[in-house]
Length: 215
Ligand code: AMP
Image (cartoon, rainbow, N blue to C red):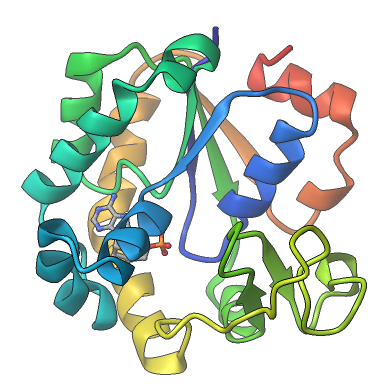
């Protein structure tokens, strides 16, 4: 069983890579952003605490996110198929907490430059039901019917925090805190694999499996 972390700046393509992987492997996609947005939607205690941080592009405090992740890892699907994290860990504390509870096999770092990312984030829409991500400016990621999810037929929405101001903050946060996480993982031989965001969609399944040690 492979346990995977998908790593990269907000909008680098972690969710999209997760979908590519799930086409051939049932490994469980866990996006902490999606989990938190779900808590906010349901106004749970976690959601009420997290909302203010999320709206302003700041990281939700470690103790809240670490606890939420620990609970998710206890569920049967993860025990059976392994996990692929999307947006976690984002701080050294989170990386260390993850090491305490599971064994990580692969960290896939998706590389991208800031300007490309900004254009992409501002054109990003997603399905409110299944969270699948689409783009209004990348033909390869457009829905078949404009504005509707291919899978659920739900009307696609633009995330409230996908605006220019919040993007700058999230980019700075990524530079300041998350880069340390990569350095932490790079100390372990063979753990980190780099993927170029711009060519990622064209990677054949066979090659992707080899790159990420997946079956
Ligand atoms: P994302 O969907 O991954 O871009 O996450 C959206 C927002 O949720 C982020 O800007 C943070 O406020 C919060 N968030 C998601 N994952 C984490 C995490 N691992 N640690 C702290 N905050 C997080």
